[in-house]
Length: 331
Length: 302
Image: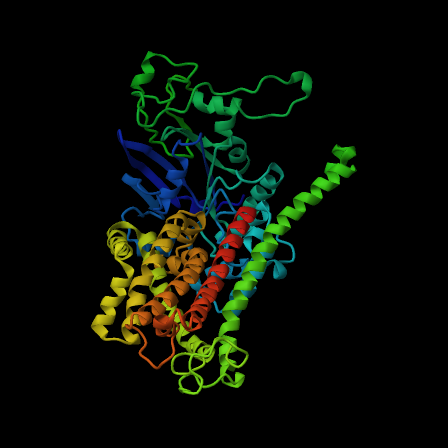
């Protein structure tokens, strides 16, 4: 990937000490806890972790779309050096769908069933970018072609239910890259499609990214997907970023037991004589309303010891510098 | 299909084919019945005003001109619905009344529908205090004795159509609002609404362009029911002497006119009454089969 070193000097997106809380019967539950992340121009950062670890909430915080009744309690989301938190909804609307766009997990549910693709996609061009009806239509056809949809001029009249899952995800991606965003947020973009389609979607995303130079923040529970696509990786557990670093650092020299467990649980196809039982992580994800002091992974950690309760859980070195909250697995 | 046959070589046996055929028949029978009853409904609803438009050409006599040589003639070829106490042809009067009843029913339903969908949509989409206020008004309206409510408007505006128009509209929107709000609570959580938000569209545009079209289906059914309801209410009010004033023909007032001579000349009330029922059934058939159809499609595609 071509990265201009001058531009790389400052970061496109920096998340500092982001804390997001949800009210619950037992008080406030922190879905994201003092999360630090940084993402520079044209790079891809992957957030990986189990369900409920706070990766989606973190992603949505970037465009101030934390699902109700959640709320950002503290922290900063620096977009090009300017804080996005506390902006008016009008200001956020100007950024959403223009500079930052998003794709969702379930491509079928993200398309409005009552509109054809043409109407739906060209809305972005007409309403957000001020194109005329005719120009919007032409751009829509071009766009569908660029995401690999065959005979786009005919497909444009189709309704979402007439498309396959992979095709719908391509359409969603098309809509997300249409305004030429500088950052694409992808929330589990391949979870709802099968493995062959997953490959195609990921390579499409990488391709589009290389063409346009946009940055990408990718959320997935699948470390395989993340390590295939991302330059940098942040591993989240129970609302904390427990380890972050470049892809190679995370994959080849993980420093947190949770990252190691995730890597070990990766499904690898081997010749049958070498096949062994698939590694799993024992126990359940912790109850966010009832976390132990210190490291939240200690109950499931094979290396847990007394001192784990005193571990500070803040990773102040944001990705891409390699850091881990676990002091015992170091180097 | 090919896979099935490979997996079960005996699949082509007679029993298998018979079962397949039975299943297919059951599925199509359900669909056909729904389509059939819908077209019957459409037929009734269209045919009655169509015949009414031809009314003067049918030669049954002027709806308002008395004919004292033919008082209370029982149904015959010359007067299919008989004649009333003033010798007027009952069928002519029923046909002449059709546009009025359709107009009142249609306009009140349409206006109530627009108001109800808008308010219910806003209440459901935004929630909060606005929702609470709108829905409490709806609760009160629906709990109110309907006839008394409309009669109150007639009392304010005086006998005639104005009060009925206002009263029916002021009441009818509550049903649309309730249904729309319930549906909106589901739709607003859909991912395509979230996707529209991430695209930076304004709330008002999302509500109008992306959410409302998805809540219209159940409202169509409500509209059919309201149409019936409003026509019946107009008839009932006219029957009570609060609606259309004589000699203007209106279904309810025709029925009312025959009430005192029910036992000597049954046709004056009964046959127009049947027409009211027929039109009501027509609209209900459309509403029901559309509801069926959408329910069915829903299961298949979503």
